[in-house]
Image 1: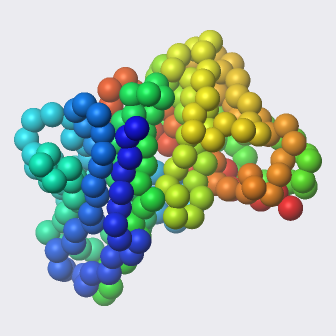
Image 2 (image 1 turned 135 degrees about the horizontal axis):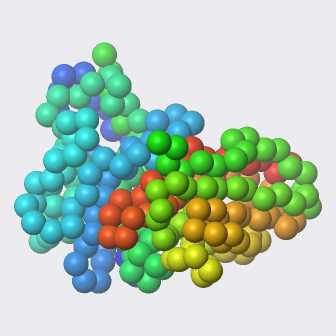
Length: 114
Length: 111
């Protein structure tokens, strides 16, 4: 079965510093990987995805993610964090067993401190 | 551009009461999904509908039923609510092979 791990419950970073939110996955076959962000009292918003191609994927709001097949990782990054980036971040993988459903990690809360 | 619309946004039920959560999407997507979100557990799939006229169980279907009324609408019903069903519920629709689009959620409390 597909699974996703996000090893950090919370990440704190100072505004202007680079940020990394970690994700590792376990899939059978080729991974379809996604990052979503959730702001308070809102639904999840799509940030970026990796299906195939370049290992460095660029997404919304200046975020990018690096796919590493040998380490089965898909870490989310941003060169310079903003206070407005503070939110809950979910890594997800498509699960072909449940109608191409998404399997989500537990989430990482990012706090960007001014 | 409404996307995915869920109603209601908030609901408080007494144990044993029933209710239906409504979801509609205007993006002409075939696949629709119901998730529940609990702290520290991410989102877990309750039921999904890969196309109009079909529904299937997900990871945590017990205590729930669904109806895919047409291509746009996918409802979730709690027949006899229990405190363990206190959660935030999200509906999503998915473009084949691409990302999911989520509603804003329904915060349900069962007392």
